[in-house]
Image 1 (tube, rainbow, N blue to C red):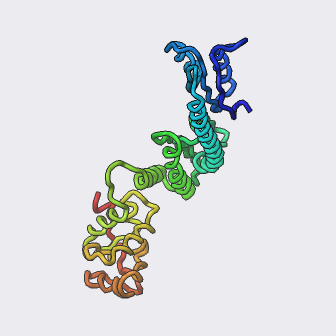
Image 2: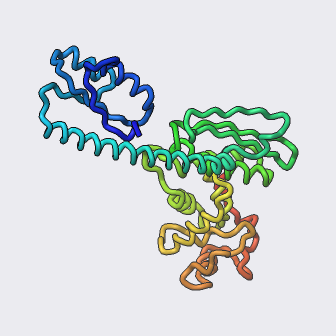
Image 3: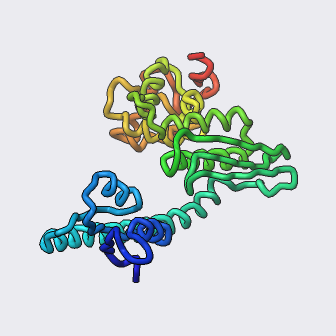
Length: 305
């Protein structure tokens, strides 16, 4: 029950003085808050300073006022309750972080790290950190390993590892080349991490590319995504085009799927509007398919390089 107490100590006591007792109490208490108030007849500044240096939290010189003692005890009682609450919250937070860390490790530090030709040691200073170790086997048999370290400490540094791991393992398992994996990782992180400067949104980037498609030509969702460095984001390009039909400056009708099909036609004012707009630009369509698609195809990666 000692560590739930507020101790009143006299400096001059038989057998052991209060200064020595305070030092021993502090050593035993550890991180527990045990307020110590010295009651002393000493009034030299050096003596009072020694009381505080030994672990005292406050002092009163004799003769003391009982009302003041009661007020100080109440004040330190409030401090103890607050300290106890903070300790409980911290312990709860640590347990939550440990549980979250086990999930995080399965995402950020998994793959084929247990391969016989891989040895790694991760020794973070905090529960969460920005260290990333990923390994995956490519369909051609190559073993790809990614080492990364996000700037900063704790959870803010660790959070970027989750989308990075998703892109890395997803693309490697599908047989993408290493340079494509790294390009997609870079684009993904650039789109989600703060840069300090206002960057155009993904939709805005798509719109700018679409504005450059010449009349009489068409491109695909995937071609725009590839040009923007996000090869796996063709679906998002489609969403951008669906949102652009009410913007006259953006020729959404010139963007089709990878086979030349008018897959976005239902998002226009009428089901035939997309085909009508293409017909005005001398692009022939039969059964929702662009005729001579390969000849009409405009590749931004080629045309804008």
